[in-house]
Image 1 (tube, chains in turn yellow, blue):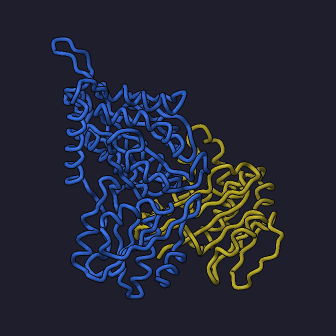
Image 2 (image 1 turned 45 degrees about the vertical axis):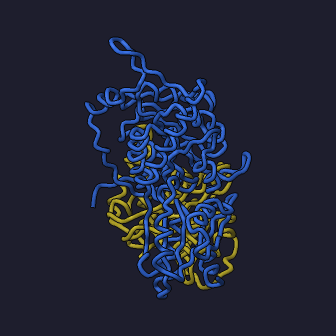
Amino acid sequence: MTEKIIIAGAGGQGVILLGKLIAEIAMRQDRFVALIPSYGPEVRGGSAYCMVSISDEEISSPYINEADTLIIMNNPSLNRFEEKIKRNGLLILNSSLVTDKIARNDLKVIRYPFTDIAVRLGNPRVANMVVLGCFIKYKRFSDPKIITPVLYKFAGKEKKDLVKINLKAFKEGLRLR
Amino acid sequence: MKKRILLSGNEAIAEGALQAGCCFYAGYPITPQNELTAYMAKRMPEVGGVFIQAESELSAINMVFGASSTGARAMTSSSSPGISLKQEGISYIAGAELPAVIVNIMRGGPGLGNIAPSQSDYFQATKGGGHGDYHCIVLAPSTVQEAFDFMGVAFDLADRYRNPVIILGDGMLGQMLESCSIAAYGLSNSSKKRRKDIKKWALTGCKQRSPNVIKSFYLKEGDLERFNLKLQKKYKTIQETETRYEGLYLEDARLILVSYGTMARVAKAVVSELRKKNKKVGLVRPITLWPFPRRILQDLTATHKRISFLVVEMSYGQMLEDVRLALEGKAKVDFLGRAGGGIPTEKEIIRFIKNL
């Protein structure tokens, strides 16, 4: 079975990093992963998205037409990707910024004010980590402990100091629901 | 399962080159292959090689020309418009019979085009590209793992035949991240050193031996024709021995999809979807685009009378011409292609097949 996830938001919200972290965690569980990022003229404030496929078998097409899970961080992304989710799929919404109505009524919707939570923690940029915590908890995706080494790897030497706030945000996400 | 790491296609190509003993890289930035240049800038000094960001594509390819003539495993990379600029140098490298690896992470054209994935440089890569009667060997990876693995193959082929090798990928392969197992290509440091001695033709200083000459210039009557005949003989050997492809369900398939690179992955998904419904479809995925795997297509028409083909490309029918040439009118060939950023989707292809 292939789990297909699309994550979309504004440039700067860390949607591609969120995708990379999910892919890294899946890979560390010996699963096959493929991630297509949006790339190019999209800049901070513009739109950004990524498609993550996770499977126990080799992934044939990495391009996702119908996602199992859609993570939406702002209004324009909802508009753009709402049709890209399968029937009865899971929609995770950032209610701090997504105010538009959902046109479909077949979806399972989870909404939390991820950006507001991040602001309360002291940095709006860690909203993606709150989502990651929420996603992992809800999907029983992996042992949450896996995140610490993964974050240190991604931060590298230069950004080591940022791990703490990201971990805090992740744990906040685990606590949701 | 082997230990794997998450890499983009661009990074995997760069790391694959380093593991294959590449010690010279010259390039000039262009999207969507910038991660390759950036990775080289960081890693090449760590392995004691030379990284140069050249002032233009022209100088980058000519730096590769120079480095290769000294016996070093040398490469450059770019994307479509940049590769067009490199064609003169590639022709000279082919004419001087030097090994080199050139990576083209294709984007939409013609002209400056856009930065979306595309397969519109197939003609340029497989039919020469620059001036003169020459061919580059062209490898088309379809996964990040292959992007890594094919670099070793590319450098070996380049050295064996003293011929430029092109890695033809597209923006999606370059940007895509996949788990990839990284194993060194079996080159120890001592064999890297010895490589220069193996290349007896290389310009390494001619103390105590007669000078080597690297040139692509033959003025004496008959010389250039003789040289061309020698090249043709080499190309024939390559065609006979280096053709590679992947086949899926070829035993009983009645409809064969022909597709390469990123596009072949969508085609694969189509084949497995239709197989679930007991449709007799199969796939031929050329891995070498030149030499083109024509024999397998010919064999398929010889063994199955009512077989037909569907070529799917991110272009408006470039590889299609090679498929038609191989089949010599003996089977029906249909075509589905999009370019300029459009990628045929699974649904689109399945709908197209239903209407055949």
